[in-house]
Structures are given as C-alpha cells and as structure tokens.
Amino acid sequence: MANMEITLTVSQNVARYVKVDADGGPDLRGRAMLLYPAIADMTISHGRAAELLGIPKWDLIELYASMGIPYLSQTWEEAQEDSRAIEEAMRLDKTLAGELA
Image (cartoon, rainbow, N blue to C red; front, side):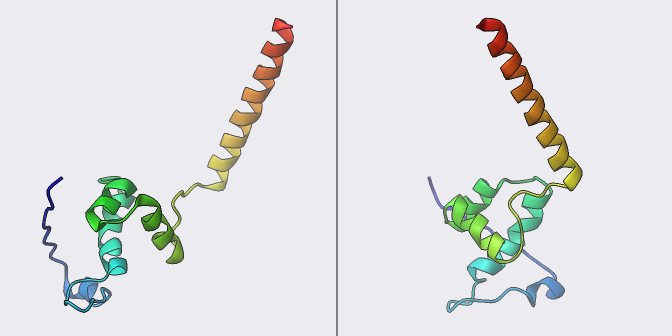
C-alpha cells in the first residue's frame, strides 16, 4: 500500500490545541483529535483513522480512552434494551432446548 500525504487546514482556534512534535508536525494526540470528528459522524471508522495515523486500531482506541473519549457510547436506555434482548434470546434458547429434548 502506497503512502498518502494529507494536508488538513484548520482554523487558528483549533490549531492552538494541536501540539507539534520535533519536526514541526502535529503530534499523535493532535492528529487523532483532528480525525475524531470524522469518526464521530461516521465518515470514517476507527480502523481507517488508525491506518491514516499509522498505528493499530486498538492503540487508537486506547489513546482516545486516555483522553476520556469512549469507544462505545450508549445511553442507559439503549443498554437496558440490549439487556432485555439478551434475556429474551436466552429465554427462547431454553424453550427451544426443552422442545428438542
């Protein structure tokens, strides 16, 4: 896979939050934060962002976690709905297992 150079122009308000490394380019945290809005609006995946940064996906997820940005964001209602769905699936599994016995 060939490397691709990406130039990103940001406002001065955003640029002041991006630290630079020794060669004058944005540091990993800064580059990750510049990509985060595209992840948040599902324009790109965590995996694609990690590829652009040249790091493994789980390293990016851990980097965001260290900054307080969760990999999964779910409301309490969504978690309860998932729990109910799991309980229903388990109930159906037991019912089917009983019918097959």
